[in-house]
Image 1 (cartoon, rainbow, N blue to C red):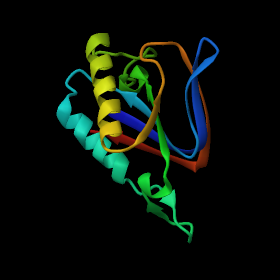
Image 2: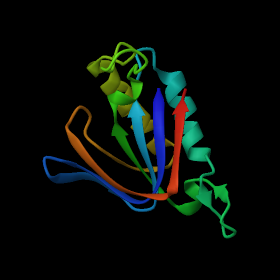
Image 3: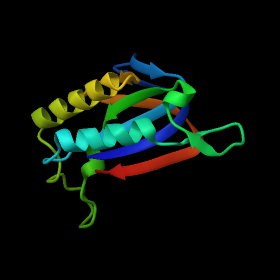
Image 4: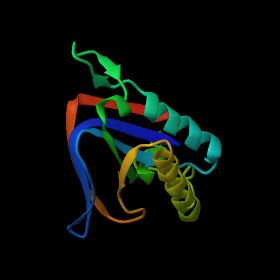
Amino acid sequence: MIGLIQRVTEAHVAVSGNIVGQIGKGMVVLLGVEKEDGDTQIEKLTNKLCRYRMFNDDQGKMNLDISQIDGEILVVSQFTLVADTQKGNRPGFSRGATPAHGKAIYSQFIETLKHKGMNVATGEFGADMQVGLVNDGPVTFHFHV
């Protein structure tokens, strides 16, 4: 499982011109699901996101986690994160989950975040989405669990 995490002041995702998910201050999680991903990877990444100190305190240091700023999370599925780009000029997706497995893991990931008390908005799995965000910092982290 790969997560590309961006600290944002606001973000939204649209499908066919309609906004399907929107947040204020918080983080955008672009989520790539691999073939072997399951409960272990979901638990590791959700725990990391809930505890990751990427928000500034009063002194401007990254000492606060998402709950300490009462932040929101926008989760967007992005299978291209699992692409193999090492060979040739075309990405390979052999590490990626099947659509059925990817959707199940994506849904379980979202439910796990909600169960941990996070305020979560989402994109639409498998849809052609347009994501708009204001990256705060910019601050972006890459996790591979």
